Length: 610
Image (tube, helix red, strand yellow):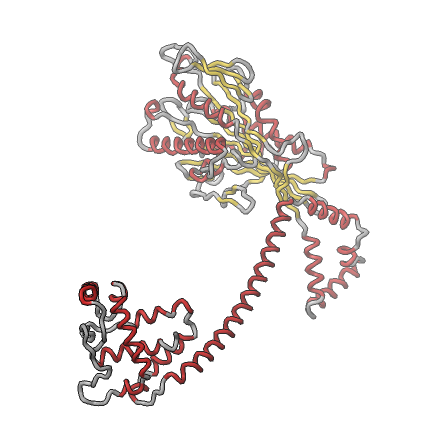
């Protein structure tokens, strides 16, 4: 069970601002052909000024957490800027130190150093081992230290401890921790053990020569020191702290570096990642950004904990005093001044092992489940009796101090749970209960609806049966349409009653003859001289109602209603409207038997619905 424990007490605040230190590289006369002197100088231990490029008579002043001048040693840089954050990793928190600046400003020298003047990386690792050794063994914690070393070259994550590895992915676990699956983690027990792995891995890093730097870093290097401390006594708490030591590649102006071919591609990847880093800083400082573009670059993805995340961060900005580096220095100072406004929220990454309690519960469940678990339990009981101890006494005896300590520790963990987790659990339980109630109500409504639909179907079928006395053979062949009509009656709603009338009230234009002041007989003889059997089987009132319906549409219907009649389009409907306006209302309706029969038959089936 993993938990995030916020940093307590007033000494360690719940928020930690990114500390920014600026280091000025010594002035090199051989690089300044015009001998113009330095363009930047330090005022005190926290302030410096640079000449304003808009007005050479003015200067722009900056204030940072620390300023390291040209005479500052590696030891002073480490003690004042890096050493204060190292104790946090022994308590399960994260820390990061990264060097930023233009190419040739001394970033690699600050982080790596030399054999005579070791840099931040060897001094920080040595300090971590000293802190672990200084811990009292009576505290009841065991410490283990591991290291990983990687580089980001052309947006590819490469393992420097395993040079044969390919591009590694960057993932995020459920606790929002950044991890790299497949990255080599080597356990180290002393500084000499670290040096044995680190020096050969550093030679695998990609470097090249440019016009501005004889040994220019062509990739971003990241060293990870992982410290895990485990509690000896129950409940075996485990805290994991990580220290990121990052040497960034410098931004380059290809007009001055003379990069071509593969060097130009490398420079483009470096500048793009640094540009994304500046966008991340701007988004964090704005406070209104919906999305922080961490995923736009592999570098910012790895620095997610360091910038706006959960780490105690220190940024060492390296600058050069020569005038030809003026704009690079000016941009680096502006970026550093924006970075110091970023606020991180550190927390302790802690894991609690409760395996003995879980095992006791499993044994308790297995004991009452069947015959085989009981046999195993009897065997265990015999073994423990021979040894002079019993499992029940081991797990359930409240008088044992280890059991009491475990219970007290579990109670404290439950009390330290955040209110948000409790509220979320309550809200989830409440929402599940509401969903169950809604499902039960839905089932009741569905059962009632099915019952009502059955009753309505029975009533409608009882009403429709006496409407027709269908005994002739031709109408018996069309039982499928009649059954369809009965099925529709069960689901027809009151608002849909007039819709079938508009669809069925259609006749062919050839079958409609409209004449002024002329009456035609209602009875139309069939063309073959036979008796019209379908009219004899229909009620006269139904026939009269259908004819009156058509006559009503012809006399008062709109253009849209006339177009609804069968085979009467827009042109014919307009002709009917014109005839009606000139000669008045129509008196009677006559038509051929076939078309009129089909219309009246269809219309008569819809009349019982009304």
